[in-house]
Image 1 (cartoon, rainbow, N blue to C red):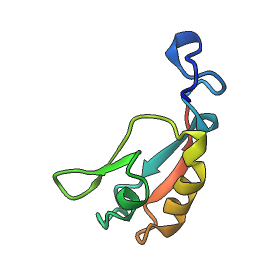
Image 2 (image 1 turned 90 degrees about the horizontal axis):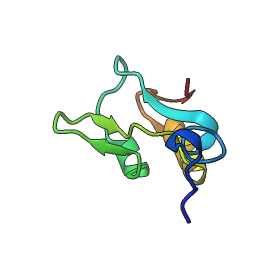
Image 3 (image 1 turned 180 degrees about the vertical axis):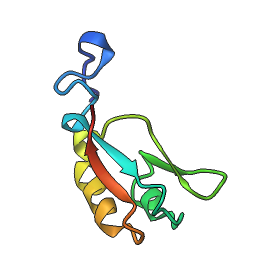
Length: 86
């Protein structure tokens, strides 16, 4: 079941499509391109042609929140974080 869009086209509930406005972010100064994040979160992360992750430009859906937190904890370079969306 997909959430219904609210005003402005965003999903109802948080204004950013899920996750209370949380976004997965990468600290590019730390990322070493291990690819663990892409393996744990194929819905949000793809490995680019350069061997580094490419993140989906969307908020973290509620049903993926625990997997996102796991990916943040398991990043070997400590490059992932969960940010509040503006």
